[in-house]
Length: 120
Image 1 (cartoon, helix red, strand yellow):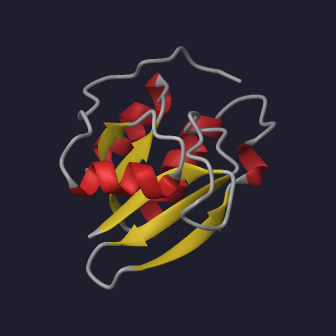
Image 2 (tube, rainbow, N blue to C red; image 1 turned 90 degrees about the vertical axis):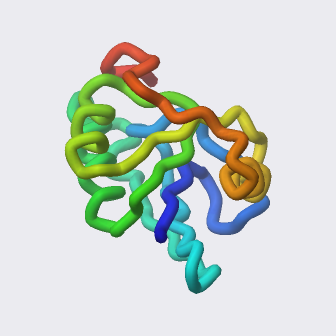
């Protein structure tokens, strides 16, 4: 199973980005093969609108079935939920720390948007 993490870096020690739609990158970790890929999301960093929807579509296309992030807006939440992607909240400082929390089952499942739209 693949898990997406919001980040600004290219490795596990990079910061976990608290924003979903405007996260600079997604680290997609494959739990089965223990490999990862980085997906650039910079086209949504300064989008006037639609960043959450476009980011959610990107994560869905990656094959991820779970997302670990700090916050998620209503439009992104709807798209992710419709794609069958479970959303988990983390305040971890790094992707590595968030992955460890995910593996240990310590992250709460997000059952709704926790930010208004257009959060920058």
